[in-house]
Image 1 (cartoon, rainbow, N blue to C red):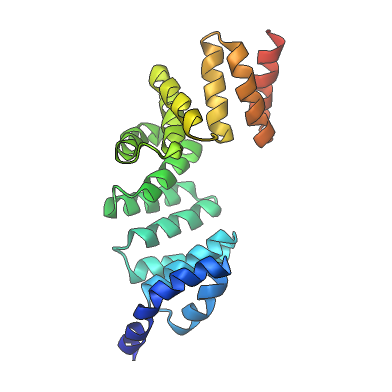
Image 2: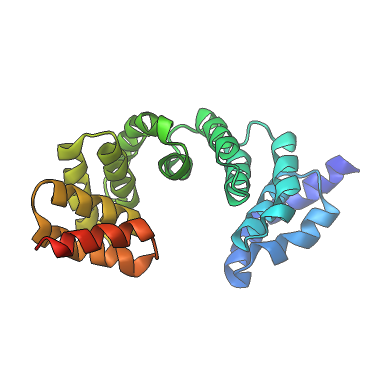
Length: 225
């Protein structure tokens, strides 16, 4: 019966993906499917993704863990588990889950970006490891500005300031960088004696997030004008 259930649901997967766009809520769409077909990896993974999107990390964890057990060779399942673990503030375990996803799909930008984000925010001793991953991602897709933001951050934290500056500038040409990239770019310009250029970046960073360190750096820069 399980095999029959799988055969019945497989043709519906493409339709289900389209319905997600209509529902705008993967959790709602896949909750009933998961109740009926808990052993189908696609269903478990998508239900976990929906719970994660709604920040229901505690509820999502057993679903994501189950999805990985059902499909240990699925990079997407490991990525969703990594997202859950990060949401539960279990960064080292999240990092390990993303590493497994990268082993299975090393060129997948979602895996690279997710892994780099965790490392940069919570596992600083692994920052050098993400640099070649991000460089490879940029080679494959030079228009994805998120990769330039993350690579700039990683290079700055690794002391490779000239390369970091080039990536910060490219990120700003392609899009609107997040607060952490604006902050590191601003700090780098301060260290180069370019406070006039740094202060607008630091102000933007402070407008986007209430980070005491960002605010302190901005005050110090403004006081030295």
